[in-house]
Image (cartoon, rainbow, N blue to C red; front, side):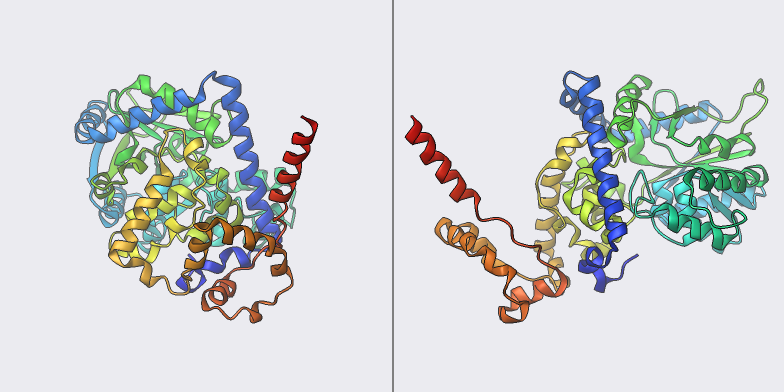
Length: 471
């Protein structure tokens, strides 16, 4: 994670190559999302509103649905555990592995296990853990962190990945052909699946009605994590529950289109418990761990709507701040607009350290417009800004300038118009000649783009005069 001193300079220090990868990757997914939803639904917003209402109803009755889900899983033969915080969650996973004599684990992609840093904990306890999602596997061998919820290595390119494979001895020699990289990863991981004792997954959704967890992937690695292993552990946030199987139809249609523009993700699994006696393969034991880790605190706050999130990444893809800075700038597992809300809330006593994240937004509202569960993210960002102000958390953000002059200019139309006419001069005045402390502080961590505005009002006035003359 980035240190406190580097909060405001992450984007500045990005290479052009990484910056381009972030921007193009996010923009492409966002364009695909718009095309898919407009093509397949006459009123996409109505579907989003419906999904949001289902999730909000679930959150408001979460205690009831958790009890129902527990009973349903137990009826299916799974053992259910509840973990209050990250320490309890990690210890529960370790205890299950020790109970069954497991020494090695293959795991599917899970944001929650990233949140609680499960991989490092298990490695410290002498367990072998292998990430099997291709992106997460690359991050593991690079000792890196995800920069996107859905595409964790959007900040990397094939040349850097090929160098990492060469360094780790995955393949005989350097080769940056994407198909070759994928085949080499597949060959490397195949034996890991066969040798592991336990498979670990998360869950995209959980049906309280039937006690089935839903896993959606585009690689199929979650299936391999369970196919050859006798023990399946599912680590799930308590907010992932939906009331009925029928509700799943709404979310499965939305999450693929919202995240990547697909009509449906490639692999969709419904796991109801350990294998039955008439099934030849599959885990003999299934453990479901429901994790709180401050989610009930968020539920009790005025930002509870953020728990609707289904981790599609649509808000990241459309966000102009995320496109410029990338995920590492957020110093948290959850980047982008959703992370700017969720990360400070989950930080607990560490809230002041992340209190600046809600300010990493233009409040343009695009994140709300694309959210498949209709989360009012701009409103939540404003509530957290207010919380930081009331608690004095903003005072800890040293180096952040107080630019009251901008607020003054925006409230004075004449002053604003005058400033616009003088805007071009900023392209020629060195920063050192601007003595105002706020301006110097701002320029110390940011680089102003070339000023190219200031002509619209003149153009509009001329067009209006021409239209009047013609009439």
